Amino acid sequence: MSIADVVDGTFSMTETEGDKTRPSDLLHRCVNEIEAAGTDLSAYNTSENANDVAALMSALGYETYNIHGISYGTRLTLEVLRSHPDAVRAAIIDGVAPLQVPLYETLAVPGSEVIELTLQQCAADAACNAAFPDFRAVLRDTLDRAAAGELFDADGDPITVELVLTPFLARNGTYAAPSTLTPFIPSMIHEMADPDSPSPLLDHVMQTDGQPQLAAPLDRAREGLLDTEAAALDDAVRMAEGLVQADVDFDLAIDTLRRRLHETDVPLARIFDDEMVRSATELLEDADRRRDALLAYARLREGPPDADALRAYVQATFPRDRHSRLLGLIDAMSTAELAAVFSTLSRQVSQTLEPAGGNLHLWIYACQESIPFNSYAGFRETTDALPWPEVGTLYDDLAQEFFAACEAFAPAPRPGFHDPVASAVPVLSVGSTWDTQTAPGWPALASETLSNAQTFLIGEAGHGAIAYQPCVADLVLAFLTDPLRTLPDTCERSTVPRFHIP
Image (tube, rainbow, N blue to C red; front, side, top):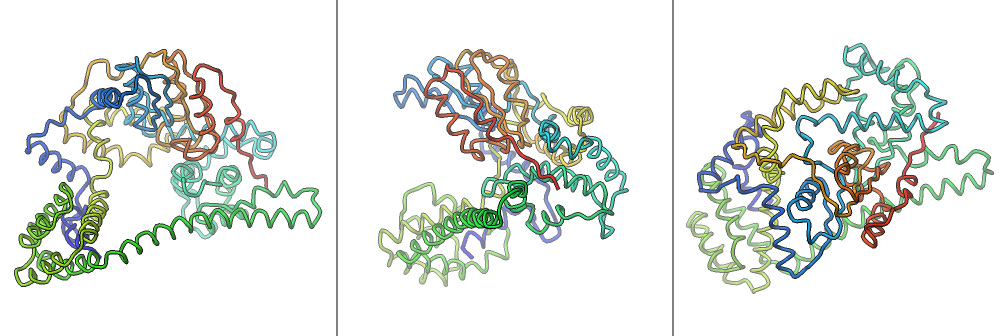
C-alpha cells in the first residue's frame, strides 16, 4: 500500500459503503467543478485539436508529414484532412469512426456487422458451408429461444442472449493473446442450439478461459500424417504455445525487475512512502482531509523534485507528532532519492486517478460535438433495425448512462463538422472483422469521399488492426513508400479464417 492508496477514497465510485455513485453523477460533479474554476470546456474539441496538429508540425519544421490515426485518432485525422490538408503527404486511418456517423446511436452496429461477417466467412468456406449450411437459421433460432428463456444447458442453467453472442464479440480487445475462437464459432452455436447433445467444444472453451488451444483447429492437418509426423506437429504446437506464454511471462518479469531495482537503488524513497502510510491514520476518518491530501499530493507533480515542496506537504498534511520522522527522512535524502520520491508520486497518482478519469477527454468531445447529433431514441431505432438487434441489449445500459452523462456538458455543435470529409490526399483506410467499437464497414464509408483512398478489411483482427496482424504494419509501410500506388490484397487474403469441422 502507498500513500496514494490511502487517500484515494475521494475518487472512488463508491462514496460510502453501500452508496454507489453512477458514473454520470460523478461526471456532472467533475464538470461543474472544472467550469466553476473558469475553464471553457467548449474550447476542447476536434477542430482545435486539428489546429494543434498543424501548428505543432509547423513549429517542428516539417513542411510535409504523414498521419496515422486509430479510433478517435481517425476522426482527428479526417478533420486535419478537411481543415489543414496542404502539408499532409498521406494518412492512415485504422478502426475508422467517420465524422458523418452518429457514433452513439450506432453503438450496436459494429457488433451486428461482426456477426454478419462471421456468417459470410463460414458461407464462403466450402468445408464450413457444407458442415453448417443452416448456420444463419440456427443462430437466429438460438437467439430467439435464449431471449424467450427457453434454452438451457445440460445442467439446467439458462443459456442467455449474452452467452450466445459472446463467441462473436469477445474476440475484440484480445491484444496480448490473440483470440482463437473464430474457427469454433459455428460448432459452438450448434452445440448451444441442441443442449441435449454432447458439447465438447463448449466444454473446451470454458476450460481454456475462452481461448481454445491452438492444437484444436489443426486436426485436419493431421489427416494422412504418419504417427511420427503427427507427433512432430504436436511438439511444434506445444512449443509455439510455450513461446507465446514465455513472451508474456518475460515482459512481466522485466517490469517487476525494473520496479525492484528502482526501489533497491533508492531505499529512503521506499521508507519515506511507508512512513507516510503509517502517518495517515487520521486522514482515513475525514473525507475532506482525504480529498485535500490527495489534491496536494497530486500538485507536487507540477513542479521539479524539490525538498522544500515535500517538507511543506508533510507539515500541511500530517499530524505534528509525525513531522520529525518524515522531515528527518527528507533531510537525509540524496538528490537521486528525492527524484525517486517524485517519480513514485507521479506513478501512484496516475494509477489512482486513471480509473476515475478514464476516457474523460473523449467524453468532452463526444458530448459536446456529437450531441444533439445522437439521442437514446435514435439508438433504439437504429438498433431495432439491425439484422442482429440482440446486440443492442448488451449496450442498452451503456447508452442510457452515456446520454445521462452528456447532460453535464453544454452542447457545442459546429456547422458542417459532421459532413463527410472530402480530400484528394492519399489515404489508407483499414477495418477489422472483429471490431465491435468501430464497424467493419465504416472504413469503406469514409473512403467514399476520399478520392485517393484504398480500403482494406483485415480478418482475425479487432479495433486497431495493426495491433493484431503483423501484415498490417507491412501494408502501412508499403503505402507510405508510395501512397499513390495500388496495394495488393495480400494482407486480406492471408487473414481469412479456417473453420473447425467436428
